[in-house]
Image 1 (tube, rainbow, N blue to C red):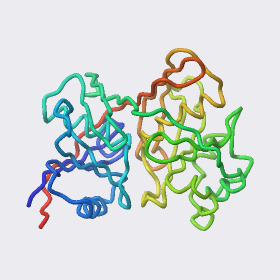
Image 2 (cartoon, helix red, strand yellow):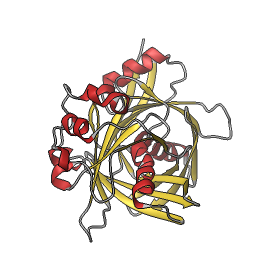
Image 3 (spheres, rainbow, N blue to C red):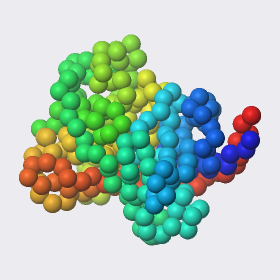
Length: 297
């Protein structure tokens, strides 16, 4: 049987930058094992399988796989799939995607760089208390202990809805570039390192960028991820914790993937009231790179 697929580069307007994504359409007859094998074959950070929605008022149902496991939610697959489905179905305003984490609405906007998609997180980031020591984090990232943290920011763990993420602030851009995984030391991170470590540092003033980021998920089959929308969706958790509460809406621009020559631009917004988060939105562009058909027997 043949299954149409497309690949896109997400969080970019230029092909061969951003985060690559495979989207397999008409996937309802594929079973779990077949989906996992196809994701391993594409060997991208994530592969999306599009199925008919359970609720016909929604656009589609998504299942999302890394090369090693299924995820309940992920950011760049949500943005990329929404932009592709908007093009295929002629939708101009909103895509409604059913994911395991819940319903994820995606607002569409026409911009000079093409369709811009901004998803609303189904859940707010939840903090964990079991945070590894700076010494263990530094060893796992091949850094020195003094390079962990900046200003009031310290390492933390938040769950943005798919799995707890280890958020690691670094002292400067040089430390971010220097970081690399030490697999021998990674187990010492415990449950906090089981899914993904998200490293971030402040950007220079006047650049139009607030943070630079990198993400490592070696136990998920992803040595480094060029753009991680779900981890970006969790970042307001640490920001609220270490910069203090705010009222209303704040926005940030995050650049990721630069050290992989896969520059990705992620736009993040968060609403807060009475000291807590009430809404998180993550947006970006995507550009289609290839199309084809899978032959699955």
